[in-house]
Length: 361
Image (cartoon, rainbow, N blue to C red):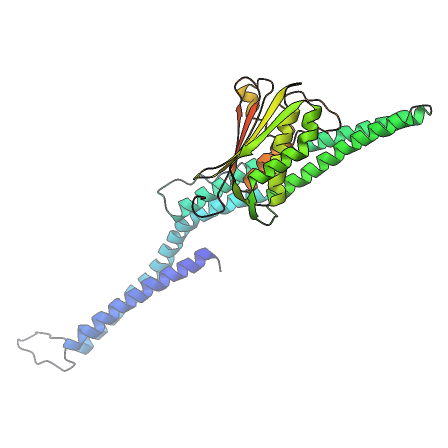
């Protein structure tokens, strides 16, 4: 049976039981005070009914009333159930359209706020988030396909040139192929890291971001030396709860991005960690070109590049550094904020929740 039929039967049963109870009360508590004996007539032509007379008169009326209650209960219950279940029908239609790929449809239920209105609003919110997520994934997949196509096309072109020119320098060809292949591997690993962060498939541990910052600076010090960028790291012990590998990748990506987007010579990168009462903060600031606000707003999008950078053995240019950092931050229930630095460059601030219920001591 459908939910509407079940509700109709329930409503009809309640009405019939209530009517039967009422008739029973009338029969038991009222008729019992009427004696079931023949009462002598006091006046000529006077009729004084006894209990049997009243029962014979009351029974047909009671039967008619019960039939009316049964029919009225079914009809009224069917109409009432239909009105009550109408919002579920609209939500179900929206779910069917979503299953067919149409995520732009909304329930948009009107009327006073009740359980059905709350359910419809939650469903609309879910559809909105799902539509945004699917659009982001489609855009990301299109950009990733384009980025992966480039190194593969370069490799194919190099091989075709080498085949047509047997006298070509083999060592130079191998070096160029290795550079292109390394870039493709870096991009593939970045995509896998993004997928891992989005799925939150990691074990959470307490991680000190100040130690992660020192490790990232130590790892990237050779790259900074080659680009003549000075590194400055310091701050408070900032403990967060999350994946040690992903949080280390977060800090490394931010420092790496700050180095490769710095000034050509004499630039600086400052890394600071703070343990605030409300949250943990990681701040990475670098000198560089002046960035307009509209460009800063999209820097965390996949494959966005804020300024020209030198490509070399540091394999910069993938365009996923800040995107990975933002996804890792969101996977740890934090937030990432980008602001232009006064005088040129970028300030990146990551806020992560405390691993403890109270403020750190």
